[in-house]
Image 1 (cartoon, rainbow, N blue to C red):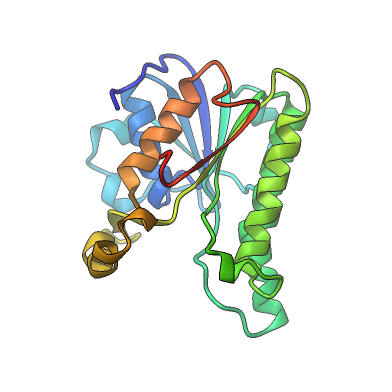
Image 2 (cartoon, rainbow, N blue to C red; image 1 turned 30 degrees about the horizontal axis):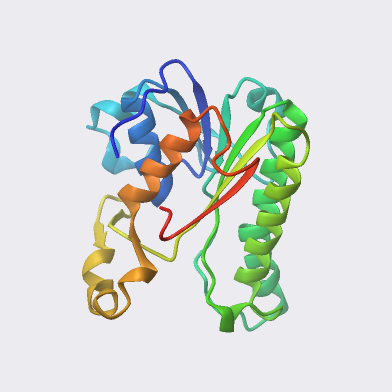
Length: 231
C-alpha cells in the first residue's frame, strides 16, 4: 500500500502512545496530518525521544472514558486504540476491569466523538475465535460493546462513518515504556507457521488506519469491519 496523503487533517488517537497507536501516528505524521496522541499519562514514550516524526505530533493527556468533546470537535477523525490484553479473569473486579478497558472506554470515546460533531471514527477491535465468544470472557464482551457503539455511530446519519479493524494476533516490535523491545514476531513465529491466517503485522494495521483516516467515502457502507484478510 502506498503512503496516502492526509495533509492538514487533524487526527486524534486515543492510546496514541501504545503499540498500534504509535505506528499509526508515525504514518499519519509522515503523510502530513496534524496528529494528537492522547493517553492517560500524556507523555511521549521515552524510546521516541530521538525520532524526528514524534516532534511533529502533540502528546497530550486524555482519557477515552472521559473524552474532551471540545478537543474532539476539531478532529477530522478520531482513532480509538485503547484496550487491555485478552487475559482470563477470576474475580468480579478483574472482570469489570477488562470490560471497562476494552468496552466502556471505547464506547465513551465514540459517544464523545459523536457529541462533538466528529463524523468519522476508527476503532481498533479484535477478531475473537468462536469458542471464546462467551459472556464469561470479559475481553470479548468489551469488544462486542465497542463494536455496537461503532455501528450506532455510523447509523447517526449518512455523513457518519465508522471503520472497525478486527485483526487476529498482531506481530511486530513492541516497545516497553523504558525502551526495551519485545519482538512479538519472534515469540509467535512457531504458531504463525501453522496458522498464518490468524496473524497480521502492526505495520499493516497502521497502514489501514492511515488509509481509513484519509478515505472520504465509506468502504462498504457507513460501518465497515475489516478483518485479517481485509487488513
